[in-house]
Amino acid sequence: MSDGSSADDTTMRVDPQRAQVLVENISSVLQRIESVANGRKVRLIAVSKLKPANDILALHQSTQKIVHFGENYAQELTEKASLLPRSIRWHMIGALQTNKCKPLAEQVPNLWCVSSVDSVKKANALEKGRAALAEKQDLPEKLRVQAQINTSGEEEKSGVEPKDAVALCKHIRDECPHLQLAGLMTIGAIARSKASTPETENEDFVALRETRDKVAKELDIEEADLELGMGMSSDFEAAIRQGSDEVRVGTTIFGARPAKKDAEVKATVAGET
Image 1 (cartoon, rainbow, N blue to C red):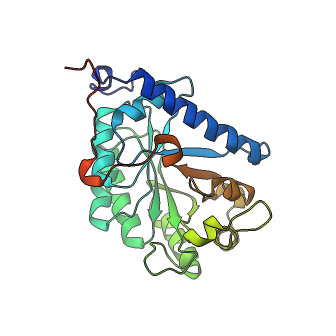
Image 2: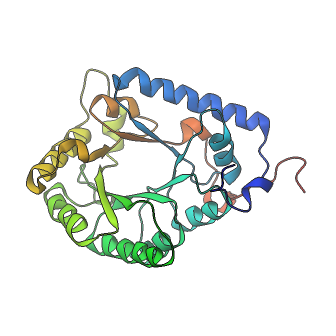
């Protein structure tokens, strides 16, 4: 690997057969993205939660050179980041407790984006963590963050209501100098995702786009400078058709996930001592 590799990635083994399956799966996803993107550049985040670091390394070292990986749990992301090359760009995409924001931002230099910022408190904690890291080392860029919007109105979903998006985004932009407001993100209602077809529009995707446009207008930001993060394994093609700049795909690439209690951060590969 490059000079950005960690000390441990050179000793981590990758199962060649597993690597081939993963590359075939992600190549198929990339082709599907390209077929609906109409020439737009759409970022694919490979959601590797509860999957071993070996799988991530296999894709990162492959001919596809995948760099964007998403995790749902702060501790799992931190552990994997310590084992894998610095050239990986980590995305925290899961619900994030406020007390875990500062340690995550401070301990993972190649944390590239936090997609689940839904409060001023979380933004402030991420800012403190990144500021502390900046005192220890030079950081080439700001930590990107996305404001998570609850477009479906479901009580169990994280995210701010669309009407509160402008205030949150303004705070991130104006009060968090180590953060970059990269865009808005939503995880819509499952029923709406399943009902998505090439002929119909997903209400959650429409709502996120409208919220983004309002934020851009109110804060005098170009719409193109605020990305839309929407779409997962079940609906990423529909999301791209509706303007998504970033999709999160996990099981279609990595297969079914184990129970959290059975997950391994690093798998033992045949022939490994």
